[in-house]
Length: 140
Image (cartoon, rainbow, N blue to C red; front, top):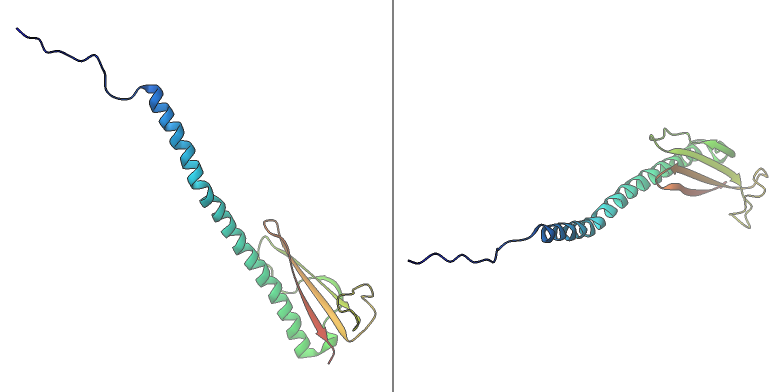
């Protein structure tokens, strides 16, 4: 009579081996998905930056339209909030100064009338910070 001989070796994985595999796969999954998470945040920041620059350009266009319709004197000097409606989450300010012909970036004598005005429009958002655009107007 023969008996079936059973092997003493057990096939399969131990609990420790399974835990090691799970930890290694978890670390690999984080390493693989991290670039996607970073790029999606960068994409959102790009859209906010684009919205902010569109707002700044719209305000610059409004100043240009005022200049075209009413002349050089229609552009008020000094600091003020923007005239156009602003999107939620943004703030907008503008500064318009007279500048001398010899140095069109010199705003130190802002109130001394010349034939040039420099308008600086700043749109602010917590995600992207300050976005600034400038426009130079000439009285010609």
